[in-house]
Length: 80
Image 1 (cartoon, rainbow, N blue to C red):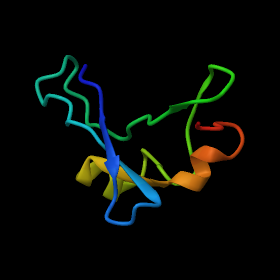
Image 2 (image 1 turned 180 degrees about the vertical axis):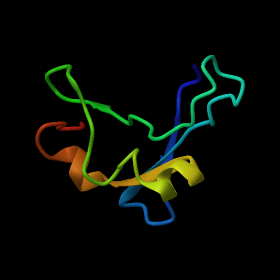
Image 3 (image 1 turned 90 degrees about the horizontal axis):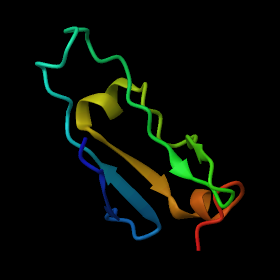
């Protein structure tokens, strides 16, 4: 697995998270229905955000999502 890349979106108040598609040759040959995109909280737990829905068809097709920085600065993430 390759770690996603994170960069500022064209709006510097947002982060864009990009990742690579899983190989079509993956064992089982089942279709990809969603990605699980999680962020580490200040308590060390991993949680999804409201703005980065890995089951959204557009997110799956584009291999990226955009998260407002304010969402990560607030509870439960408290990004510093």
